[in-house]
Length: 74
Image 1 (cartoon, helix red, strand yellow):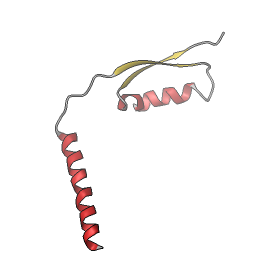
Image 2: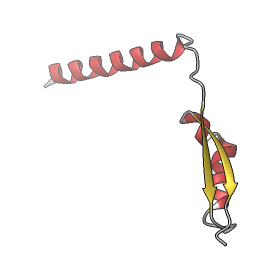
Image 3: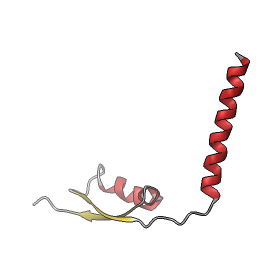
Image 4: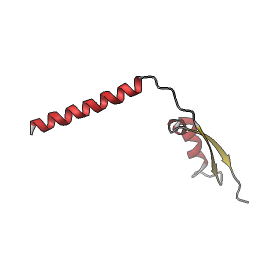
């Protein structure tokens, strides 16, 4: 039982070390993909969510350069 715990713990530590090494190697950032995101109305359920996501950098973290566009339904 203890041997199984040690093997699992060792594997977990190895994964964290590899992930940390990959993160700190200074790899060149990939260019952001340009996308257009639209919303149909200026309501509480659409615009604030997209704008908050843009301001918080959620799109950039996913590799997207999002343009938020209002598209009227009429």
